[in-house]
Image (tube, rainbow, N blue to C red):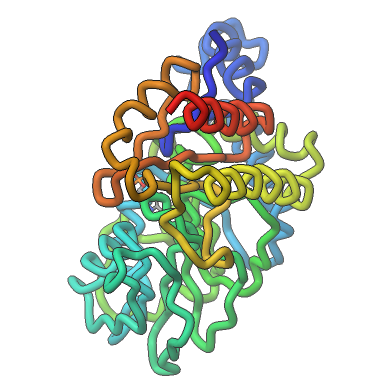
Amino acid sequence: MKKHNFYAGPSILPQYTIENTAKAMHDFAGMGLSLMEISHRSKQFIAVVEEAQALFRELLNIPEGYSILFLGGGASTQFCMIPYNLLNKKAAYLNTGEWSKKAIKEAKFFGEVDVVASSDDQNFNYIPKDFKIPADADYFHITTNNTIFGTEILEDIDSPVPLVADMSSDIFSRPVDVSKYAIIYGGAQKNLAPAGVTFVIIRNDILGKVDRPIPTMLNYKTHIDKDSMFNTPPVVPIYAALQTLQWLKSKGGLTEMEKINKEKAQMLYDEIDRNKMFKPTILNPADRSRMNVCFVMNEGFEEKEKAFNDFATERGSVGIKGHRSVGGFRASLYNAMPVDSVKALVQVMQDFEKQA
Ligand SMILES: *Cc1c(COP(=O)(O)O)cnc(C)c1O
């Protein structure tokens, strides 16, 4: 049976990425060796890193003055590296969910943290709108897509101080005005590659402003100076990321991706709104994530939750169980998810309603 992969992360990747990476496991770049057993300093692998950086620049239209890094440690290590490198006295954070909270916790090790607004009063089911970014903050941190709660900041906001964004789960899902950001970072395992590589797009001129000494591996400058080759970078996930970037370009880039992502998300939200058995957890359509669509059983149908999960799984729609802090369901519709898979889930919801 065809599987429709709705897992939140690690998650669906293009067949192109999976097949080319599998081939390179046996023979990378005609070297007669596996991608797993070659030097990261071989000219063939340096070419991979350079092409991946070039495609980052092309797809996201990254201006001059930014570096693109491929690091280990996950987005979670960035929660610490960002304040380590940027927080001199005070940083501002927007609290929109679990990942924001984790980023805030790390920043507090380094200085004062001003949480300018939070949606924790309603279990993070909206994006706060009325907040003021303090002009004396060293930077302002946001999480653009809240993978767990299913909200998303779809506008590139204007910030009077350097803007730092965790885009782990919506990178490459739409065009972004990179010039508005000082740092964009994320774990690759939601929308780009298998787990193991973290991308960081960083404006070079924001560094060098803190007084504290920074350990070598946690200092962005180390990795900028050595072009992500200070130590051994995650070779296999970087190769896979390059395949996804090539695939994105062949699909028409981010304007086209955004069009398809809007269509897929709308299709599913429409069915959640229509189907009497379900209701959305995010009520304001402007705040709804296109990547992670969260919904729960409607009043009167609460006891059918497990039955629906089994019903969907039996029909090939896998990975829809919601995060424990929200419950219900979460269907993740990353770039690689075909429109037909969303149609299949909508059909499953309609069939479930009919037989109930
Ligand atoms: C998954 C996720 C993270 C955590 O990433 P790791 O690479 O596992 O550290 C951080 N932020 C967001 C928005 C995520 O979706």
